[in-house]
Length: 184
Image 1 (cartoon, helix red, strand yellow):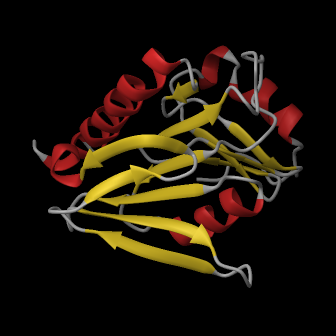
Image 2 (tube, rainbow, N blue to C red; image 1 turned 180 degrees about the vertical axis):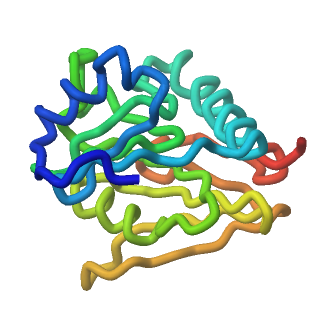
């Protein structure tokens, strides 16, 4: 659902998104257009919550940075702001917690809903500086780890239910059995 046909900057978008009447809405900015995201299915929110739990279990004791929840929006470009289902941003890149995230997260997690173009979002994140995107498919019980290849194309590696995710260079020593995400 498009809220208006005027093109907005990210700064204008944050003002609108934080107005009381938009408090319970999940909004993103796509090419300057404010778009309302559909409500997530219960299964998707539980999966996102599990991922946030495991990320925090690694990040907090090591004081590595910040793990955000679905309403933690990130500026990806002048006309783009996304709200991943979960994200991590390193204190190395962002030593203090700002009022707004004006840069992309190091890790973005999207629990994929029907009709969602997660590959478009992944390209946006990665081009804006995100190093890893996890595209989580609840029905397939698979997580696709997305990165940019040397030519700027999207490289996708599937991690099925019996695999273990790792944090790579973004979250050293982090590992998460995929089955933990989907054991509902």
